Length: 166
Image 1 (cartoon, one colour):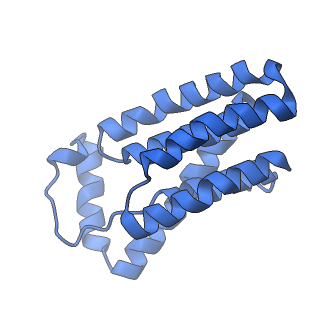
Image 2: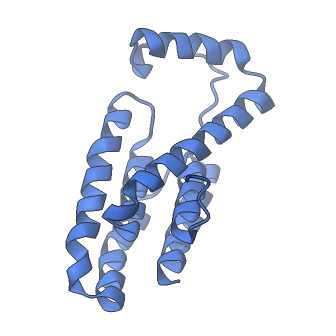
């Protein structure tokens, strides 16, 4: 229960900022970098901290590559790492898969709502060819997803145990 409350208290403001401002403030990230380990220590004891810190580090390093490619924003990388800090090492694979699935749903909805089928096809072809996102032809109508929404949905599915994964 504490994990779900902690997760929601992190994600609700992050989703709000990502939708309204297309950024996740570093103040919010910094606050939760301090709060999450303290809550974990108080609720579960010091013995859980190493595996939770390892989870955050592994996720950060894994997802950092997507930032380098221009596929995710820096705030999204930090937010997903904080969620991994909450969930711990054992739930990292499920968290990443749930987030990716929710991101796929979000992307398909954005493509359908914005009618961006042609643009998406061209960008997908460029990705398959190995062209980094920064080198792709920029289109003024390009839709940027508030990926904190996908992170939040994936995190809630993971933490609540309602994951669609077997």
